[in-house]
Amino acid sequence: MVQLKLRFKEELRRRLEPEARKRDHSLNSEIIERLEASFQFAKWQEQHERWREERERWQEQRERMLLLVGMILERHPDTAAKKAMEELQDDADRAVGEDVMGGLTGKS
Image 1 (cartoon, helix red, strand yellow):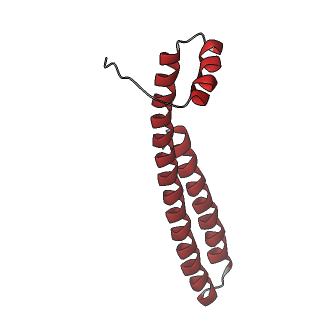
Image 2 (tube, rainbow, N blue to C red; image 1 turned 30 degrees about the vertical axis):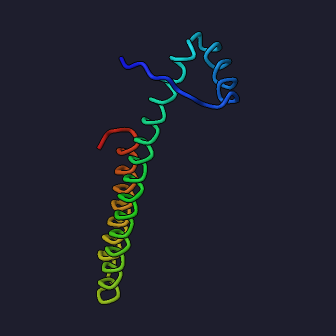
């Protein structure tokens, strides 16, 4: 452990002390827990941003795939191709949803 002497505004101390009492903590413990929580929150924000970017990439790939399949359907408008397109679209929708939910729950 390292001992530090901190300076901060009286108003902040007045806000921290009742919170520490509510949780039956010392002022020192309250400050440390809040600092640690701020680092964890930053980590969660970074992870959320990565998931959002990954989801956008999945959606862009899905749109490109659907465009290509649509072009194929224009040339070959038979019933089997339409059914394949619908199944492909359902699979793509499911894959995007599972990937995003896997990221949120920690499962892939």
